Length: 245
Length: 385
Image (cartoon, rainbow over all chains, first blue to last red; front, side, top):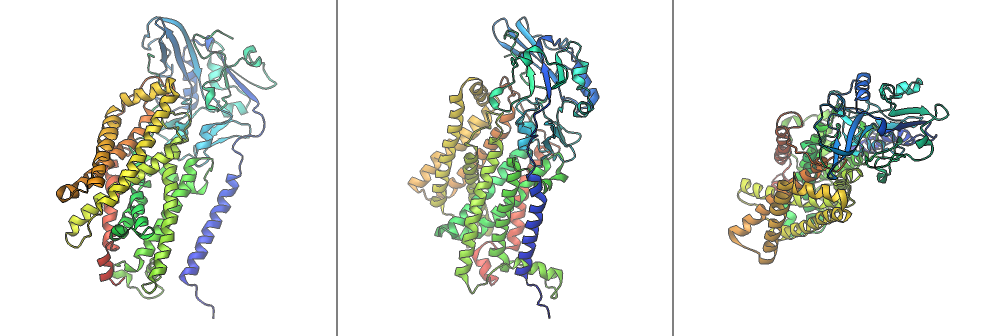
């Protein structure tokens, strides 16, 4: 007659079974490379001196992605130097309605509108900190967010040094710019690039349309380079007082 | 700098629930430290409190993730942190560390209290009945015939769980310390700061619970070892203060925009909670009182009430410290120029009323557990355990 299983044996088998099942489920996922191995084939150039702060890019982005009210995937900052040398930074509504009704900062010695969006970093903190892999790098190297997996912890929002991620309170998940990934895969540029009337935003594929001279000559600026995220959006200027390259 | 300095997406996304989580989880460490000292280090005057402190640690640990669940935008997906963890994230590792810590603590509680538990009459079920199985599973005990074996097993489990607990509480700090884009959080000292602040808050809670339990039980309760606990609190509080000082000093040494933002934060929006509550009321006053208790050994009413008063102040300090770190780190923009004020909402799932309700939950659980699992020695003896 078969001996009945005692409690100790039952617990031991249950523990080993659970541990084995957990490892079998999670290890293949852990083995995924955190980012794409191939070189990123796209470039995104922002030339702030061309930006007039009209906000067309911000409105086009909201129309395309129906972003949560009050948050935005792309925005425009107004940076300036006052007559007394004080720095001015206005970006509270992201320039969506233009800057005509924005608070008057007084006379400025130098000023610049700086369009901003997700930098699609080579070493993205949002991917590194996401506990469930909802922030991930696509095979092409795009930093994407799977909103069906996101648990809404907000860790990526805190970790992004550029404030490009935000919480969509209606969906309960994070949200952020992906350079219009679906459009780009179809060969179309991101909507903000299409909407810009002055060409302040430019986008292209390596081997396709030629990037601006300042980018191909290696004179691009990166926002907050000391953090080491290696942002992929290239800026011609970021400081209002800086000479144009 | 004029203008707001804030980008449109910058908001206080981690609110009172995250603060409460870091506070509640820390409170569980004190009970474990007391049990460890009593069982492994054989600190005799803490021995009568070992079982009670274990129960308290368990009650606070198992309820601590609830605020996090309320904070999550999609709480129904919380299981995914265990199912598809991304181990580059401190938060995913932290889920595994929490699971190990909670599992070990649960095991210790089962081992210590298993055969002394009092069951509702429904548990007297016939053999092979599922209820019988449940009862068998929690009678996890070698039995009164081999007390030395039992003590050794509990000691080993306690040591292992204390190690897991220290990693767990360090990880709470590491979660914030890993955010390199935020200079208020990004510090290698953060894990150590959280370990020591968890210890002092847990020990303070133990003091208050022991005083409360003595008042409820009235007769037969062992005297609270004021000097032992006072000395432990004094050392841990001094280390925690030094770590916080070093963290702020590192920001000052870094200088520039980082120090302008940090000093502006301390002197501006955080002045009442940082300088007054955390610094003066919660740190300096208890430090002086604890030195007095340890050196002068006051007797009478002063001896009875000063340590609980210190404990209350230290609890307020740690709660303020959690607030100052979690909320404070979101009060200045990524540009490090300018500040915002923050007033938490009262209602809503992340409001102060919900937070107060969650704060009461571990106390209710402890009260319920103490009814089922006898925490005091004479109760164990009277039940033949």
